[in-house]
Image 1 (cartoon, helix red, strand yellow):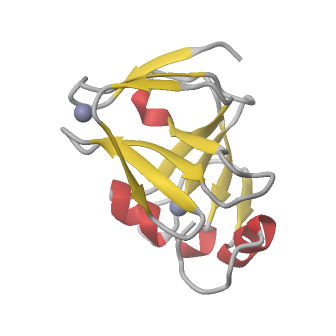
Image 2 (cartoon, helix red, strand yellow):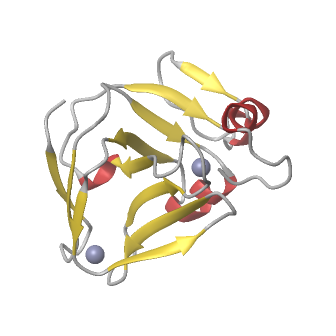
Length: 144
Ligand SMILES: [Zn+2]
Ligand SMILES: [Zn+2]
């Protein structure tokens, strides 16, 4: 995949990132819903992505943090902080970029999606229990 250039809503933060594979994922968990007002659509970024500008991070759970623009609040990325093989894995907010060219291939926490909207088409969907089993996360909490 080729390197992409993006920016937050106000332009104070610029991001350079390369999708690790040709896929977008959407997360419907409670935290992503509150963070974005709907779902968070991301691509997994190769390590070495870079951001310039006023980036703030928020520890959103025992295993992850979320980065956002300190000026305008745009969601930037979600990063695994848990020690182990997934440490540092980063899901970059796809909306920062004009068009990544990638198709939506996965929906997470599908059982947490509000009933009033849905993506068209077919793709792999995982429930809260399936996501938590995949990440070997603690049972409690609705957060990714
Ligand atoms: Zn901004
Ligand atoms: Zn989520």
